[in-house]
Image (cartoon, rainbow, N blue to C red; front, side, top):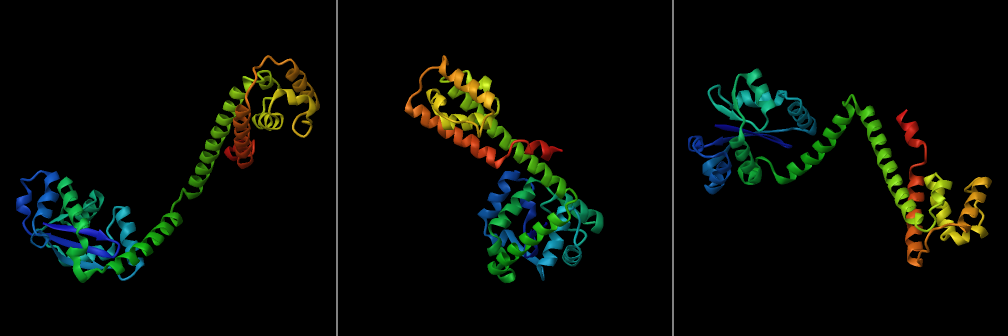
Length: 279
């Protein structure tokens, strides 16, 4: 049995020297059986098709992603795999494509995955000088950049995806803002319960609390830059006759901190922006 193993630096073809002994072994035991023996007696490298450039590597990678066979892989398999030989592959789509195009018998199961795991863990020892660590690292980096650019360039839904992600972010920020505002109103409501009916806007509520701190300060403060004149008068009148309980200095510090969180989120996420983004 032959095993096809794809790497960023090229296609590798390994020969399982005694595949018959694997047939009666449970899939989860295959890896241990191969690793237990000398690797050279269990697996040996039959052929290695090195990519000449990141362009070749990108073509091979994108073909695998799309369930196709690249020209280089097709040529590599025709040269090194006989019609009667079994070819183990790591992807079912790739196996179906190889079977359809080249007529080779491909297998893909949990035992194959265990064999590939052993190959991946001992790849350097198995390939030797056919693929150096320096070459692999350089090709991995180049392929990663090329593949990312390819996916971005050829994604037909990339604009829609970005819009959906942006709206999702706005939704998250909106939820955070509402959560902090709700907690602020619940906490400060113990001290000044009437205020929540006077000021409905979350950000204005936070701004007023941050400036006023305790309700007894309301009478001597100016809120014209935050509230309309009628609302300001109603607030000050309510503060004088409020039925709320007193709060400690520590409560004031914590409430003020919560106000800062609400105002910070409101600056990051201006009111009304989510509505405009959705439309």
